[in-house]
Length: 227
Ligand code: NI
Ligand code: MN
Figure 1: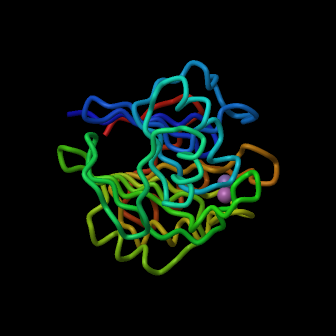
Figure 2: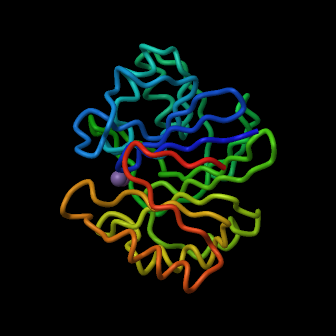
């Protein structure tokens, strides 16, 4: 079984696995890096790491159009549910067997306020075990934290982590994160969208390759990686 991960720019990801199409943090409208519009993407499930506009993005419009189920923390799931969307709320440390695999919410050091000022609960990352046993860690927006070592102990095949700095880990801490997570493959995201988070992903990739055992895949928005 092949799992295909597509980066749509910023933190927006597509994941095809187990015959299902997932979107993670579907920020298309207003995303200067996006290569496709919100009205074009397909989704069976939408995963939202936290409430910020550059992650919640077009969740409401896409879920209304596609009928996708939105998975997020209980507070965001509740807020979306009150807007008539189909939702599944989970919380940090909790996992659930969905049709596309076993999804666990992980710690993220960040904020989560919703666009209308509503409380967005705690921000999260996602650890997905696909139906054929591959482990994909999508860190969400986060600073470096030592418990990434615990996540790494689960045996990570692919880690998708922010390197943009200012709002999240920058390149130095993201390199330390790779050392804690020890993934086989790593993809950097949440950089280059705006000047404030401009980074050189190839320079970062060289350091990661030199100092860790991970393979780095620097994608351009719209490009995919097959796991
Ligand atoms: Ni954020
Ligand atoms: Mn963000």
